Image 1 (cartoon, one colour):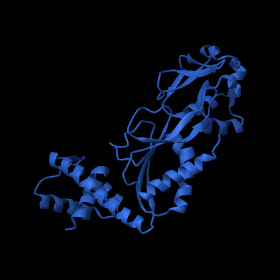
Image 2 (cartoon, one colour; image 1 turned 135 degrees about the vertical axis):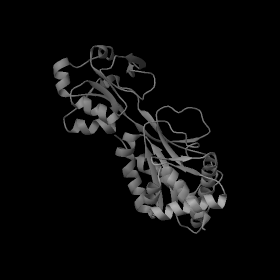
Image 3 (tube, helix red, strand yellow; image 1 turned 120 degrees about the horizontal axis):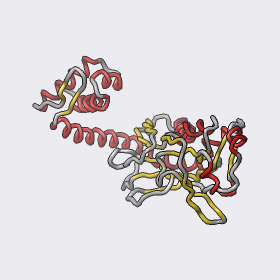
Image 4 (cartoon, one colour; image 1 turned 60 degrees about the vertical axis):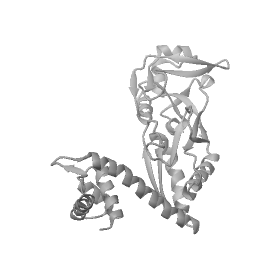
Length: 297
């Protein structure tokens, strides 16, 4: 039995949550996947998975084997990729994490440019609006927006992301346009629930930052949905330019309180310090820095 293949199959089954899902992921038949896992259990002399009609459950031995075998598989893949890179090949797998809206609108064009130059590099991109732990969750590279907490990770500034307050022309025609941040308390404001500090925006007033708090009429965990709510006339929203400006160009939103708008937010690349960084990761970092160097929104 090819134990390496069996280890890879076992991990795929666990990650997919079923034998059928693991088979689809690997392009194998269900029978082959089931047989390989059974042979692996027979060779090890322990039960790795408890099979029920509804789901698979790891045994204690299965959890340990998944953790250790997964590490060995990753190390072998890394070794093979590194040897290839020594020959001048840029290949292998990279796992990235990025915020959802930024990933869809801004990151994908940059990755497309990278892929055209380095088609042998496999990119596994996870888009979600939470702060992942790159080390614990096995990410090679993380894109993070806003303030950074103290950590052992290396941070490279990717770009500055402008922010603006937006509202629909119809909303302003009905409710009037605020002339000062303190007037926002009388307006309908739309709140991004994943921002720190609760409902409120830090705006500049006379060169000094001032925290303006409000009671939101709508709270949502997705930036694109909040922009759409603003387009529908539900209120005023604070969002990055890459989300708001396309609607401004269509005439569906306008900027408000530009004199008081907040400073830009930093967008950063985060990655763990390594004695020998894989060439593919270094090349991707350089490619992203170059792509966003001239980006202005």
